[in-house]
Image 1 (cartoon, rainbow, N blue to C red):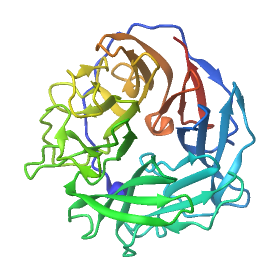
Image 2: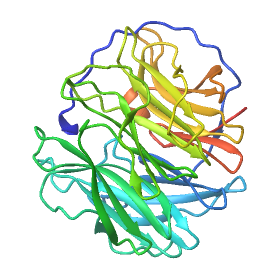
Image 3: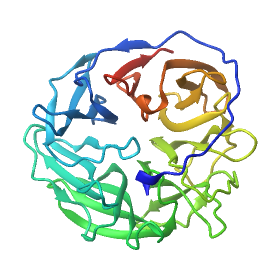
Length: 386
């Protein structure tokens, strides 16, 4: 379905935005032509940067490097010459789930002529030597399994959230969870929801109370708002819509929510086409996602979405998104800080260019600094200044 996306035609207007100081550009180890950047936080606060890189002689590799004390480690390869699904929403992830415990996931599309997608994982004890890639779900049929996200969920395990469409494009998309151990083996697979938006990425975070999953829900009437479910004391909660946008659309938004957590402070940011102007919102929770405050509009004009969010030490959220500059101008990567009380700060322009080239920008706040990555002829990274 994501190879046959419905295009949402939106009329764009000019908007004026306040500016703070420009972000500080940072070099990074990704080679020219790399794509699908992502971040994760290591237990010591270092930032793990991952990407898909063209390999010599053809093909692609999943690689990563660690940013520690303002410097990059050597880049390492997780998996090479795999059939990575190189779609902006199908972003791989490399993370440390414990001391000397590394885990990575990605999506493969073995045939260009088929809608089949599969979720793979690999593990490592040193970040250098990785296990043979293993499929992270029991079903092997040639249907869509993808739009995955992952978080360390304790006891040397990780929770991998993904979508499965056993009946093809016209069938429902199930929200599923796979628990993977440090050896990259499936411990448990479970179905969490039977019918969600089939082309929107998942997002997961861990609070002091447990896991929180954010996803784009779908009702029989095609209302596609953002919902969460929580795992506390071994039990999954009922779905809860974080804000009633009441967005009715019989199409594929390819946009969902981003989530960040620290202790029981939670921030969720998303894009919606509801109302007169497509826009980006953020909402906070101080109790691990049990309740949410008032949604705050972050964008300043007609936004494309592709949001990312990070939480700072004081509970503020930093949100990034894509937006068109003027009626005929380039697409911008914008970022904005919003206090835990819901007070937005000025908008910062991070970059601008063609929408497809910019990809899906990603944020992280780790080690006392906020970093952002986005696409281009070479993957770009920057540090956002306070």
